[in-house]
Length: 219
Ligand SMILES: Nc1ncnc2c1ncn2[C@@H]1O[C@H](COP(=O)(O)OP(=O)(O)O)[C@@H](O)[C@H]1O
Ligand SMILES: Cc1cn([C@H]2C[C@H](O)[C@@H](COP(=O)(O)OP(=O)(O)O)O2)c(=O)[nH]c1=O
Image (cartoon, helix red, strand yellow):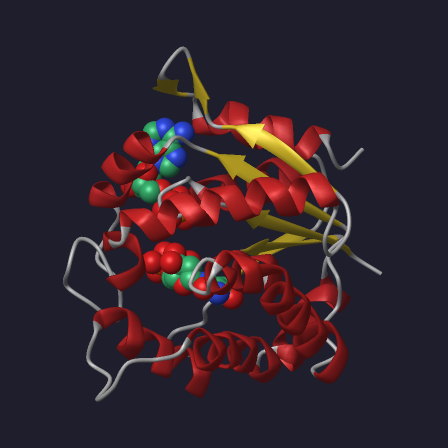
């Protein structure tokens, strides 16, 4: 069975960049590895609906629970792809996974309801939808101001021309997401966690160094 590594963090933390470099470094070391990035905007019905939600073009607002179901649906529809990728690789890197749903949707309900929302999502995805639990989740810890600058540099998304999608534009949400990730990592929700800081002395670290730290956690 392959090792399942989930790369987690707020928007603009550098997850896509780190995921690609982790795969590159693992392959250079002779191991087979591949990235699956969620949401899969152009591959699933759930992903398509999420693109519209994040672009703000759905006809009505989406409750946190409805959004959670769409993100979970995207992964449920991706289950065959996930299993095939697991069968073909030593390591599968998820650029966001179930913990993203827990961190972001729990950030959109009153604080007293956050734990219940997280447990409900974990049960839906790993229970009802039988998605595998990651072997390790890595929280990429990036300060909000640096992440905001990096979001501006992101290439154009399939679902919007805006520099910031609905979640990225909400700085309060991003702050609560950071708090949720730190709490999930401390509590070991959904399995083992490690935290990797992406900054040093107030500036972004080199992406290759961040990836090397992550690869070292797999040994
Ligand atoms: N450590 C880093 N140093 C400098 N730029 C980075 C770093 N990590 C990511 N970037 C750049 O920041 C932007 C957002 O990174 P990305 O990996 O897409 O973040 P995420 O997937 O977490 O939203 C991209 O343009 C990327 O090239
Ligand atoms: C995968 C996933 C993402 N999200 C949120 C986090 C992000 O703000 C948003 C979009 O995902 P993201 O990976 O940031 O997409 P992109 O890089 O194309 O902008 O969806 C959830 O709330 N639950 C989930 O299960």
